[in-house]
Structure formats: structure tokens, C-alpha cells
Length: 131
Figure 1 (cartoon, rainbow, N blue to C red):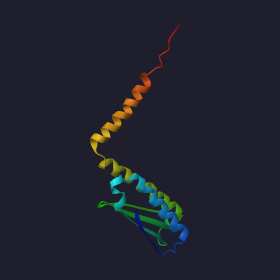
Figure 2: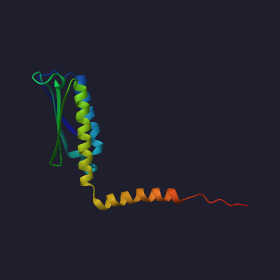
Figure 3: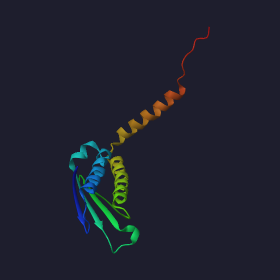
């Protein structure tokens, strides 16, 4: 995943930059395998002094996967909290994206396997010989 990070009205130190990039790169496992190489991400960290007190630090992330753009924006009191919330929002969006792309017969086969496992576990009982 290629990630581009920029800061506006805010001096982002290396610790925050590494934290943000690490969080976004962790999301790659929620994407389909064939799409993982074609991911571009741009993050914007900014301090908005004109906003409300509790929305002072804003994190915005735009992720483009195979032509589909997913965006998340959050403002909080702390920059680390804003990054965490953006990560959670993108994780949900990636999960929905992956579910849409999953091939339906494959998904049905996977579900039938899970259902089959449950029914086999419930009905199988060890045979005991009574002497």
C-alpha cells in the first residue's frame, strides 16, 4: 500500500507519521488479495483552530482501490484518537467492499461448509460399546 501523508497548520513529528502509516498499512489485510498491490492512500493531518474545541485535530484519509475511492474524516481532541477512529471507519468500508467483490458461489460454499461443520459437530457422538 502506497501511503502519502501531509500536514496542514500542524507540525507532524515522526512519531505521529509512523503511527498513522502503521495504522493504515494494517488495513491492507481487509482487502481482497488481488487488489492489495493497487492501493493508494493519502492522509491529511490538520489542526483546525476555527473549529469547536473538541474537534481541534482532524484526520482525513482517502484510499483508492481499483478505481473505488473510500474516504473517512474525523476530528477529535487528540490526533492519535482521530487516526484510530479513521482506521476503524476505513476497516468497516474495506469489509463491505470485500464482501461485495467476493464471488457468490464461493461465498455460498464457504457458508455451507460452516453450517455443515456445526451440524456434524452437533450430531456426531462417540460410539461406546456397552459390555
